[in-house]
Image 1 (cartoon, helix red, strand yellow):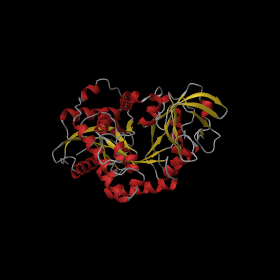
Image 2 (cartoon, one colour):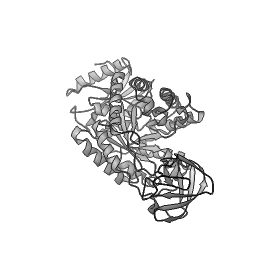
Image 3 (cartoon, rainbow, N blue to C red):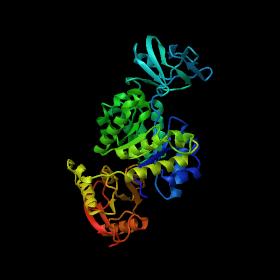
Image 4 (tube, helix red, strand yellow):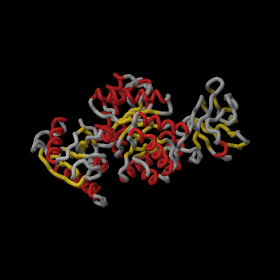
Length: 477
């Protein structure tokens, strides 16, 4: 069955063999995420090559997302690997400490003492440990343990309410962008952006690094800082999409605030013609279990019903025991959720405003296809923009993007309800339309005499030139 919601799967030790990757793509993976928080540059290059090989074996284009690490706001290492903190203990975070013990631990982020003041609340290890700042003496942050537990090497630190000054792009991130451009990553996900400037700088660096390869990636802002919430619209304007990164975000704003923010972010992204990815702990139990919990099923389904473009796995497919089963379960949940999504297209068109011809054609195609009960919409596209605009609305029929560009096919892999197919370039309209119909019938999307709404640009072959719409019966040419 045609699945509208896309699946982004993180690969790692559990999924870095060709056979398992092929099976995951066949099961429904649309985008592969490479997590630059782990591994070396050569590891990512080799995995990217493996993804391209697996996708070719499956006969489809799969996008690659390079996910940057961002600033390392973490504790250092302990002499014995870990300690246990009890409620009420005094504990020191010391920027000058080399090796931690029961009394203190070092910091990867040396500027942390300058960012804090007494009474600030620090959340360690995804909020499982809570420290209250008592005083700051030089490089030392003296705290009292409010909620204790096991603390081990390199666990993350967040300040409740946000406010840490660490820049979104580190020197490592800048080098990682260069690495990602060596294998032409289709998407670059930027960790911890606070404002539009962070995204603009990231895009500039990526475009410069990609210039020798003639490649410009699409930029995804990971919303995981409290400061990003009031700046969300400007971040969206400077990005191609956002990731609802619920882990660090929940630690900074509180778990209870995240579901509402998730819905708001997805709605804003769709209204801004941007992509939305929902991430973090979606199928967490499948790291060790072969089936998801009922709560996880509901979580994925609700993200689908919110209108997210994609749902994402992390450790479930990177290091878990059941990477293939995770993808299969996620795909099945998405399909069931989409079946239950009753949607009236007309209501969304009441307040749509546009000034561009290509946008008016895109919206006109949606409206026409909906009311005619067409089998599919087909858009002959160079850049993929027409398909993106169409995909912002739930029309409950496939949007087929037919393009000669491999790069565009890969980027379209993340757009909700869009399936990209390769169509050879033609300067003759009648020839191109005949080839498009033949391709749709051959792919099994439509049958002969099915109604299809087709859009294209004349003259053929120009970018951003969609200006024509036609209602056809498949096979009439």
